[in-house]
Image (tube, rainbow, N blue to C red):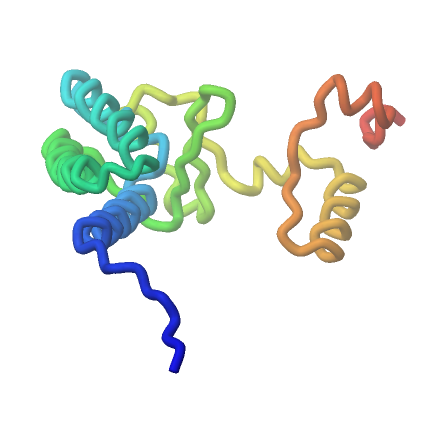
Amino acid sequence: MNKKYKPPKDPQKDRAMKLLARVEQRRSEINIRWGEDRFADLLDPDLCARYLQMRNKFKEAKNKTNYFNVEQMSEGMLRAYDKCEQNVRSRGHKELNGEIWAFTYKDIRFLVVKDRAFYAKAVAMAKKENCMDSVWHIEELLKLIPKESFVFTDVIKSTFPGAEVKPTTEEDIEEVGPISPFLG
């Protein structure tokens, strides 16, 4: 009777992997609640610097095989998330609610409002966060897309589910040539 070889269990690796999963779950919750790029901007400046330093150390450690270090960094990251979220709340910032989205594009932070009823709240949030020129209603963004591009993009996305719109580089234009309704 031949049995398949099973490597011995590594309890430290198992604990480290479970902690990594908890950190990822917590990060996801915070991104939904506060906005991925917005969260650090809402922190007290000193705490923000320490948070970013911890996050960088964590990112470096999580891809290594020193599971003791991964455990330590994961536990530290969970404590950091708790402390930082407490700081953001104590500073009076409001959570996103699904009607207001936050994201950063080319170093500009945006708040996009899905429902006009939440526009005033988004403006107040932006004012408190010093990013007044970046509040948009989703309809304003859609008006910027020429109808031909919208129809073209919709067909591509329908044909190739999961396809993403990405900026065209100068290199792309040189290789393929312009393919834009803006160019007539």
